[in-house]
Each structure stands twice: as C-alpha cells, then as structure tokens.
Length: 141
Image 1: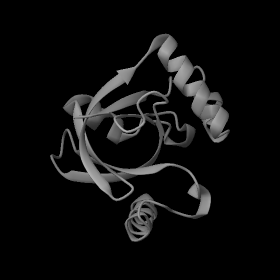
Image 2: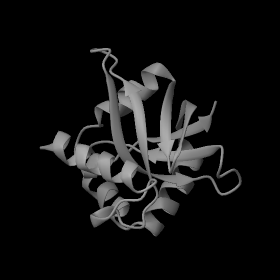
Image 3: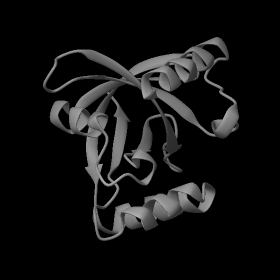
Image 4: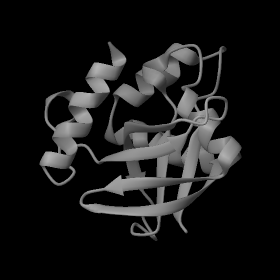
C-alpha cells in the first residue's frame, strides 16, 4: 500500500532529522504538506527535491514524476490549485509559494535532476508522448 510506504518514510524522516534509507538513502528528501483540492483533507507526501543552485535556502524544485506513471500525482494538482504549501526539510518547517516551471527552465532543471538521479531520466522515457513530468518551484514564503 502506498499509504503504508509513505507513512514509513515520514516516520523515518522525522526520526532521523530529514534523512531516510533504502532507495532514497543520501537523496535530498522533504515532506510536502498540502490540502486536498476536492476533499479538503490535509496530506503529507514525501518526495525528493533539488535545491536551486543560486538560492538553495529559499528555492527548491519538486518533480511530479509518480515513478513514470501515465498520470500526474494528486499532490501536483493540490499544489497548483492552492499556489502554496508547507514543507518539512531536515528539521525545519516553512511555508512556500508554488509555481510551475516550463520551457527552457524546465529543460535545464529536469536535465540536472536526471543527471544526478538516473531514475528521473527513466521516468521521462516512460512518460514520453503521454505527459510531461511537471516541475514545481517552491519558494520560501
């Protein structure tokens, strides 16, 4: 179950000051707090992120890869609809504004992430012709 998997990662994240093991060992992880656009329920989703090279403390990017599934994850729609969220990063929690990255900026950021983590290149290959994996910029509010 995805919920059990996420619950284990969330617990491990919080128990280890933002670090997790297994397939995400050493990867930059955060917990994304968002509200369901339909249900109104609060949700927490663990996800990898990439800090902005020029502004790593205030601007980060998340990738709505859903492991290369043909559809976008629900959290993507929740964030785009709300335009804001909260993240837990390490031991810090803070509000962010949300904007979608497109065009040449998307090309640059996604290529950088795929270079660091080859799984992201595989996700892009799986979704080619079906969807473009969204990249969201999360800026400290």
